[in-house]
Length: 97
Image (tube, rainbow, N blue to C red; front, side, top):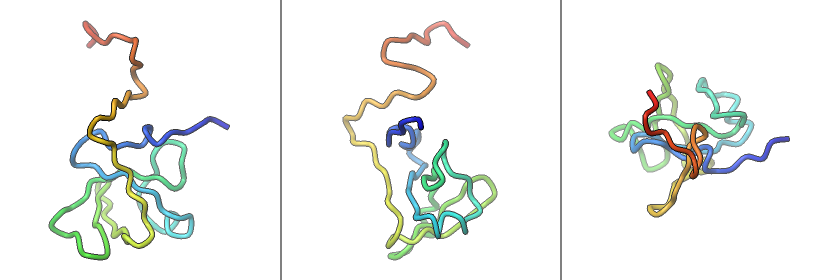
């Protein structure tokens, strides 16, 4: 079984939220999980629809409420050096299109 890291799911833009949901809730949501996980999702939060108890997020045309009481949100620390799956610290992307 391949090893997964949280960095694989870290948001790549300010307008993304990465979060984990328990199996019973993940199966009910009409959004697609990230990568090979059935529990981790990346979606765009809609700030003006956030409440004290839930986030409203969108993934394409699908919009869903995510309860804060059961979701675990993943944040990259400000000083984190996250490498995307398309590159590695020693690779160079200069000159590529």
